[in-house]
Image 1 (cartoon, helix red, strand yellow):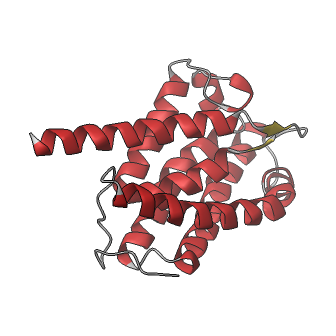
Image 2 (cartoon, rainbow, N blue to C red):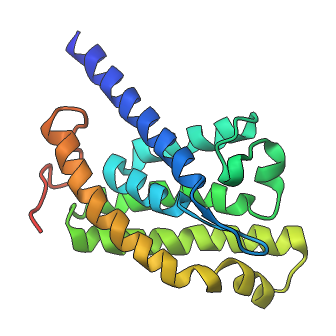
Length: 193
């Protein structure tokens, strides 16, 4: 019975963070090719709080919901055309980012400093996936893809990384303390900041 309750709590937390990502995706500042969205902040929170396994599951669920047409992507969009379009690489990048960030935190420790490093690395991974697809779909040069998909987002990305690291560590600690999340870090404890 306890294992069943634990599984249910885990599924609930994954679903909540998937929903948070969908809500944050609607926070947009329109730009010509790629809007500034709250998605990357949400991905940072997801990975920092849930870790590699559950964070990846949450991002796969988010991508699948969007792929079947649920309007969870930026601008209340959804459907496979978003995933194969110019900005789809960023969404695929969210999946890789969640895994890499979560893995790094699990293998080190959950301090603000490590969470910030993981979030900055995650930002780079998301940019990498996004720029590759942007280049291929729009037939841009690498410089053009970087100018459209990275340069306008660096300052905001750093701010979002700091926020995700700070808030993510606090949320993770709270969820563990109320039994909604198990601590599976390599140190099996939360290291104080």
